[in-house]
Length: 66
Image (tube, rainbow, N blue to C red):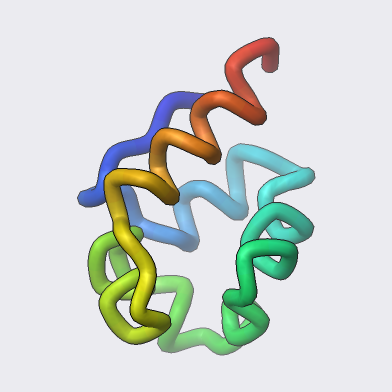
């Protein structure tokens, strides 16, 4: 799965079974919250003080083979 900063977290979690672990490793422990599932990567990264482009790139690199 390839994501962008505009990808919705809930969509990622539904399509990529290992994604929750990636989010937790990055420090986003609130992904289980129903509100967080409706956020984009950009919105979640802004709340956590993270660079959304870097997060998306790291996610895509990790899940590139799936």
